[in-house]
Length: 508
Length: 64
Image 1 (cartoon, each protein chain N blue to C red):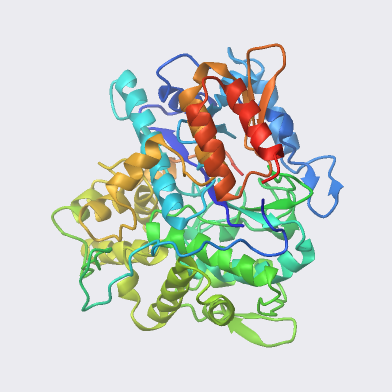
Image 2 (cartoon, chains in turn blue, cyan):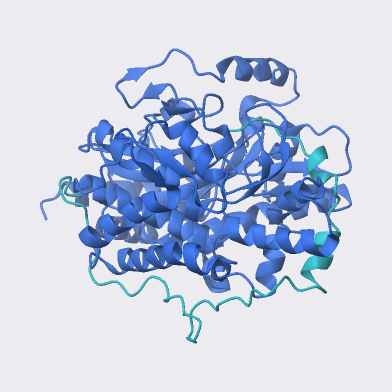
């Protein structure tokens, strides 16, 4: 079982207005994607962020009060909740909508890193093209979008990586295996940040740290995601058969511009999940994981050590090395993708200590630091100059004309793992071996007959009996392939659902 | 359907990504960037165009 996806909330601004209404701007950008009028299709019935994986349901989240206050304001707007959300399911199986005042792109579910990278890049293109259309209507390039995680004033927004995990793995085992890994993952996957912040506080300039999100981690485990943010989110929303599966919903990660960093972030996390499932993860217990994540982030020299419960200390790099060695011992030769991740993980850890400049264009925090160091030298400014935070922000601009990372990439100084053909394909079709691809196929083939959609279900309209395609346990790629073939050939979704049901129920 | 006790393994796919070439290698995979310094005519020009007060003006609401 291997399935993952990335949700990215984009920062949004307009440079022609002093006051920006992020609700309206996010909604307008999402709607600019549409060539027809918006139709409400996303079904929120299956979403409940109050369910906790530890076996209880919380009565409220830390953000509920703030959300209620926003809801009161939103009630006076000239559009409904559903219009405000503008939830779209795209022909490639992705979801594109206005989430918490940020345009959000959720990739379709992927089984390979190559597909994931292509769909992550497709998300950048889709959202920028929507902004281009919006800007055309506004008469200038006023709307700018940022694939980052902070506004430098104490407000953070997320880039979540998600993994399908067997529910047979006890949650405490996941926690024990993942916490030290996640505290140190920023060494390879941090996006880099100028300054130090805290939730809803200003930014202290002068420092450079590995991670955009580390400053906003406040506790080890919590069901919350907007306040009191946890290293390990305990939301129990599997979007799958809850008797069999969990969805590991990681909110700790930074939004990466470097494809290589995205591949390592997700690839190494998947390997660690494989280690945990086999009972082979390193046994490390950090004394204070929340402090540790900030200590590791704030030392670009990678020398800061964090204390274990047994009194010994380790650097973030050493924690990563322990996980890498365990994965190498246990998982080498498992499959081609695991071997690729192992090879690159080991090489990256080596280069971080010996030849860091070789990681420019591969790891975001190294690349951004290299750009800023050059700028500081050229312009003869200090590290406390506010210009640097602006450059940090612009590194993440997804406009090809303005973004610093994309400029670097255009000059051939960043590593491309995808081809333009991969990204073009991901703009229009989902992965062929996951339910994400099937979802996209349904959107393309039967756009007028879809009544509602969730991640795990599509309900079709028409006829006396509602026809529903259940995908809560549709993860075997061979089953997906058969289902795709049925939906490609069927004259109607009702015929397809009936044929698929018959096929599923018949003894093989 | 999936076996819940054993992780499913893909059998014999092609190498999902080309090997990152080392300093002396060349191939069809990603090219090792030349990382002396950002190109002064293009990238530094782009960096200099950034409004020094841009981050100061940038405000977002808390997301997830």
